[in-house]
Length: 287
Length: 292
Image 1 (cartoon, rainbow over the protein chains, first blue to last red):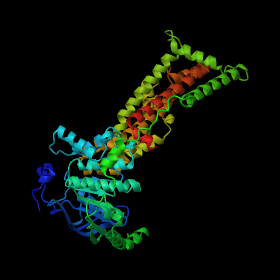
Image 2: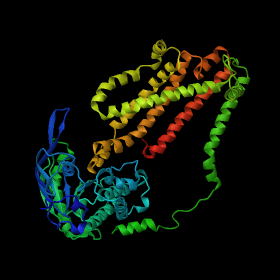
Image 3: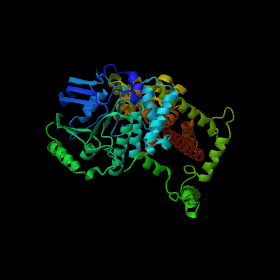
Image 4: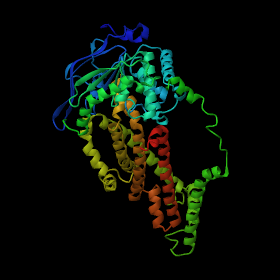
């Protein structure tokens, strides 16, 4: 475990990054919730989450609505603090957001008054990575190219389709070359066909940049398509029900994944795990 | 199947026949011209019917002038200045400038007070709690009821008029700026935080740009209210301004002048509102398209 990971490691190229496989996110008995002030109640969203995510790994969290998946991602990003237990990133307890982590949002969360290019550049305005102006411009260029939006750099988000907006969101998240990419149902609002294309692109992009990814979805298909491991979370309070390893060969985007017999088995297995929880969630019980 | 390279190319080399030039067909020209023509025909018909009705003598010209007389009074009023010492000249221009400069002055003060007050109320819950009862109370009291009070304090002066204008225009500006801050998109804030924005940066780079279009629509409403206040304050007292000119021309049965002033008020009000609409569309084009 690299305890001395810091800004210089961040600026170092991927090749110089520590070996793949060491723990990057370590969550130990993590319990988090929120306060309902009006009802004078404290609600536990996540309970006793113990999970280690290794460098370069693609971990997908699945579970019914309201099971606390988002809370986990927010804890990793530093937007919420743990009630109990610990969460560490690169060997240091999370105390707030940092340039080693970036997030992709379900509703894109692009600033509507900024152009595509300016949205992608935004993280540089808030965090000093010690890059020169030319280096920043080069990064913005490179990641716009990577998501295929170079010719749209001067466009505004409202001029783009949902899929294109999310590509901007992905470029923005990658522009600081973070160790960890967090994604909270990034393709949920995108139509089914574009969505499959976006999944392929994400796999391709991450295979190039080598990020560790924590990804939330409601779609079992999406989970199997993308994940190295699928973490199934139970309904209220969220606990880890099972961790399913996905051993399907990579890259997966140019394969007929769904024709593989293993695919059906995995799908069935995860669906059985999620089913009861999902029905419970659908009935809106057990808050 | 869909690799980035493929989709990238699909965008770059598209079917050259996909977009074809339609050129200027007759139908295309008509599409462009017809809305404009409709407006011209519509308004001309309106004024011609007015003219004919007035000429028929059904209503005394003391109350209802011919459209042509109104336009003549307007033209004369706007192109000539009053001779010095005239009680009420036919000159609308001096009165228009007087009213507009009061309105402008009042609006500037309303912005200087209203925008920071609204932003602070949205940003700090204690400021909000403390100020909101006064804001709602003053925003809901009919401003006209306060005019005698200000005449008592300030007399029939420019100060009195500007005060009333400011007081009318400031509340929509406060309330809109306040609402803008309060409704700032939570996920935009979360995104900025994740990417390392400080508290100050959250305000400067998320809350403020988000609120800007709200401020502009506050100003837009403020202009409408302010214009009402200008006229009310001038009708109540004073010897200058468009409001004064309306009452004065009514008193002297100069109906052509009175209608000319009313017509001018419509034009001024519409132009000011249109100006803020353009400003809003320029500053926040995404709002119009999202139908907000």
